[in-house]
Every structure is written in structure tokens, then in C-alpha cells.
Length: 432
Image 1 (cartoon, rainbow, N blue to C red):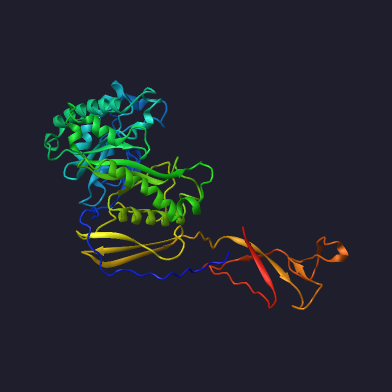
Image 2 (cartoon, rainbow, N blue to C red):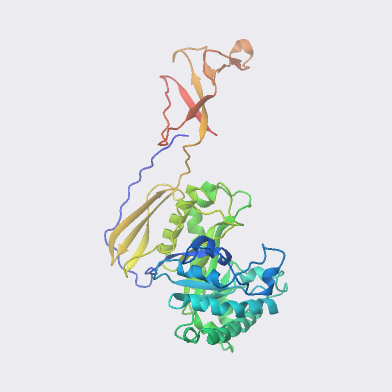
């Protein structure tokens, strides 16, 4: 219950040699929004969210959770953000049949028209490793995926050339690929690049971002807690270490490594974990630790079903000068609960970030138990939590009416807890 301020001596170099290979992206933290929920987050240029003109017959499916109708007004949402915002757009190819290809053909003209002048890149498919045994055969492998990729991108580029030929040139057309679910995906990215060498598909040469997803854990996994899973710098560093190692495995490609979808807990998050302030502190720690690696760009993901992180990152976080680097700082406290970062611009320290990740809630109540006696020299009349344990009662607890038992304690609005402890007295506070 007692809120403490942990002080650590921080020795921060005022100058740091510039690592020219580890400079940050101009928009290091981006916002990833589940496509079907995009109008709900962005609304549209005229601030309406009406969806009209279905683009595929599958929209009339009886299961609205699996099928959603989108039309031209859906893409008006791309005009709702401030001028200068760049977008990447994902086309869903999980439905590998005529209906899916018809949807692709119908939506490419709408998407490219809406994105003209504000496109960063396209993404074809999402988490293909999770198709295995579900939307694809159980023996689906890297070669099968590359065949799917070549087939789908060929169709996509044909539709794009018809609708927006100015956006289909080698200079304009770039891809995010392959957007697997984690660094331990059974469809390994380095194997994809190795297998694609000498292949007939030219789309792989247009990949400028290698995307791998990341979650700290599952919402229903046993043992997941705010302190151990999210508000824990050791867990953050361990999670990112896997990405740093994986990024090195694809260094042969010219593409940048990004965490293309990322949030606290997969499975739409968990109440009391993903939607509380502690998760926002986790988001700050994760973003800064990712920046300190020098190899990972972080894209924060959210969806309609997910519980949002309060005070989470904005779409345009990460503005910085051309030669900004972030370094981790040794604080001298507990490595799992204390983290610090220094931002260096052109080699000189400009900003510090210090995080105390100890879980605390001023709304919690508790009870106190006192070990008391009338005087330090007394041999009898000693009580614990209002009960005496004397020889006369064979050490069985006997309630003493004049002594308090299970006193309720509560912090004030500022999170401070004041408890009076008498001379020659001990007190134990149990947090509820």
C-alpha cells in the first residue's frame, strides 16, 4: 500500500558517438488500425461514417462478424487525417477463391484513388502463417506462400495499372511483406527471401519493409499480469531481443525491418490489463526500447474489438531531427522495474525519459494489523491484530476489545498513505 519514490543515481553521457546505421525513422511510431474499423476511428472528410455500395457479393453473407460491406464512402476516411499523413493499405487475401479475387478487383480502384499523393506502401495479406491448417492445407509451406504471393500481387498490379497507372511504376509501387505473426512463425522470412532468388515474380523486389508482428502474450494465457507482463522492462527487452535477432537474419535484403502489428495482448486484450494506465507506460517503454535497438520500427495496432491503451501513441509520433539516436541508460535500480533512455541529436544529449514501472493504484484499499503492547518491557498484554496469545488460553487467539483489528486504510487523492505507528509498535499493511 505504501507508495514509494525510488531514487537512482543516473550518470548520462552528454555526448554520444553517432551510429549512422541506427538512426530513427522520421515516423518511428505509427498507428495500425484494423481496416474494417478504420472509419470508426478516422471518420471521413465530411465527418460521417456511412458505408455504401457493397463491392462484393460476399457482403450479403449472413454472418456480419466475418463479412463486412465496404464501398466508395469507406475510403473517404483517408481524407480525414491532416495533410501530409502517409498510409499503407492492406488487401485481405485470406479468401483464396473467386469471391476474394473479385473483392480485390473491386477495391483496388477505390483504394488507389483515395491514396493518391499520400501512399507509403501496400500490404498484401496478413499473418499467412496462421492460415496453415485453416484456410490452407496443413502442409502449407514457404514455397506455397510465395506462389500465393506471386499470384496475388500479379493480379493486384494488373488491377492497379488499369485504375491508377501512375501509381504502378517501379518508383511508386512498394510493399510491406510478409506480415507474419511473430519471429517464431513457421513461415520463416529468411527462407522466403532465399527461395525467391531467381524466381519469376518481380514483386518481391519491390518489398521495402519486412513486417513481423509482436504481442507480449495472450489475453487468456495463465500467469499474465500487469506487473509481470507489461509493466516489466525485462519482459519488454526480452520481447524485442527476439526481433533484433530476427532482423539480423534478413540483413541480406535491402528492406527495413518493422514490427508491422503490435499491441499488449493478442485476443482483443484483457480488461484491467490492456485498457489501464499501466499499459500506456508499457507502450512508452516498448517504443523507447525499440528505438534504442536501432533496427526496429514499431507500429501500434488497434481494432474495434481490442481494448485500447489509454494515452496511447498518436499516428504522427516520432518527429525528430535527421540524426537522432536513442540509448538505454543504466539506472542502478531494479532492471525489471526501472528504465531510462537518452535521446541524442547529432551526438549531443537532448532529452531524457525515466520510467518507474512499479504497479500502484490509489484506488486500492487495505487493512492494517498491529503488533502492540502497553510498553516495550511488558511480558503480557501483547496483541497482534487485536488478538492476544497468552498461556491462559493455550496460545489460542483471544479478542481484546480495546485493540483495533483489521483497520481499513486508504490512500488519499494524491496516492499518499499516512499511517500512525506508535512507539514500540509494528504494523503490517495488507493490500486488497
